[in-house]
Image (cartoon, rainbow, N blue to C red; front, side, top):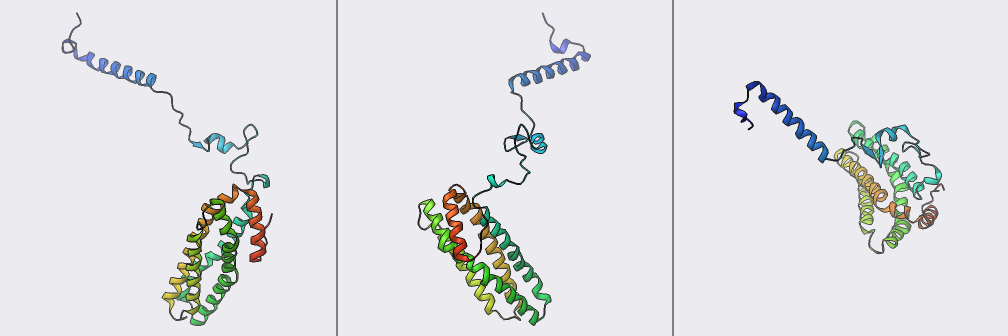
Amino acid sequence: MTAAPDSLPRCCHGWIAEQTHRRTVAMHRRATPPQRSVVRVSGRGVADFYAGDRAGEASPWKAPTKAAMRPTEPFRDEHRELVEHVEHLAEAARRMPALSRDERDRLRDRVLGFLRGTLLPHAAAEEQVLYPEWAALLGFADAAVPMIHDHEAIVARVERLAAADADDVDTLQELLYGLYALVSVHFAKEEEIQLPAFDAAPEVAARVLERMAATDGHAHAH
């Protein structure tokens, strides 16, 4: 008959606890399937991700080839060029308080030159070409209404900027920062929501790019 635990010498208690713990861990390992600790990136391990080519696979860090380029890449390239100028809106807002009235007027004129001469014609071309085509792809005629509302809000702020008193620094800053935010978010919505639909329809994308180039006067590289 096995002695009760209390009847065992005290020195044996630690050994029994250790053996019990080991058996519990061993049972857990047998019951639990092994888990790989490698972080996955797009279905590949970190080591593979950094190593680059594996059995002919291209490294995800390499620039896409022309064959792999998205159909809307020319449009995205134009957005990148526009964004460089859009960044100047926030910079102009930051500089306003330190400038004289004449300097503020000249800076505002340069900003308005970009907005009226480049950005708004681009927006008008989108409304004539890009948005109707996008609505047709979705099968919903009013799909682009929220985007058009963005344009209307941008136009309204451009006109307010042109009419603002050069001595009213607070208003000039408010409008410049507001335009920067509006345009930045608008571009992000186009690229993340609208353009993927055209990437999935390359023939439509090609037609849209051609029509956009003819409408807004900007050449799109193909």
